[in-house]
Length: 332
Ligand code: COA
Figure (spheres, protein in one colour):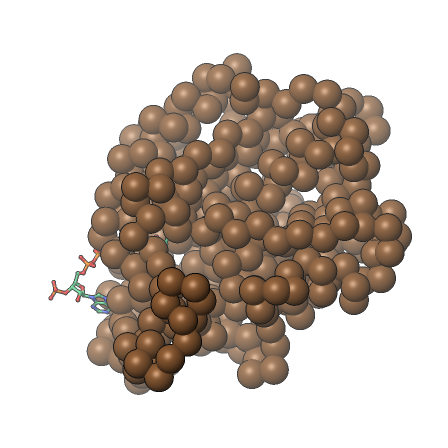
């Protein structure tokens, strides 16, 4: 059940927003015991963006959404649903999506957040495409937005060097000619590994308390090398099966847009698949791991640069807390 049935769903527009402030590896050298060389060689990250003090996730999401609507030549009233993929919502409720919908004055739209770790991007794209294919919605605004830097422990070198802030958005709708459509999707989870990437404090399981804050449980904790091993083990086989179920060979895919978590992960998964790394869109050097925003940022930049062209088959691949993983294949 991988291939989409029903109405053909196309990408109608895309846009991004990244905060102005750049934090380089050299800046981090002054903050924790790390080095540009360590970060660059272990992850591929050179710099990342950091949201301004008064900027929250819904601000980034809104600005990316405005760009996507502009590129789709669409007014907000035409949107039926706003879906925001995020792990760093402004608040648990209201949702980021509701705030964006209100600010856009997308008066005919519903609004909901998706929170499935970094794979939220691919989950959100899939839910949007499924809703359009099955005639529930005609036009959906999908946004991936994160302000991760406000939830990091800036004394923990194992995590604070990895993440950055940003947002990307896409408008999906019914394909006018039945071509250039979302082809297939597959969403997975292995909840037995739910301890690998966590933000444990501040909610039901571990409510806000002075002790909770002293232990920094309100920040991101990660078993980095276990995540690395899990992804390397699971993704190659998953992607092979996904392409087979989509009736495509690995070589039929023009561009691989992976979640930009670590250059070494992307390189080693592609090596196992025998796909040249040149087929991957990479911008981790500029933004670090922007979680649910990363595939949207990578895609939009590649489109604007003229790398991704109409008719290209593009696969979006992500993995993250849960541990969730998934892929969506689209002809642009
Ligand atoms: N600078 C310098 N040294 C660092 C460091 C930093 N920022 N962070 C960790 N180290 C040290 C460790 O303390 C350790 O030192 P030790 O050998 O003296 O104990 C050493 O580097 C190796 O640590 P390890 O965690 O084994 O490194 P690694 O090669 O696995 O790389 C990650 C660490 C986090 C880059 C890598 O595991 C990774 O990318 N994992 C996946 C994470 C991910 O993708 N998460 C998001 C999923 S959505």
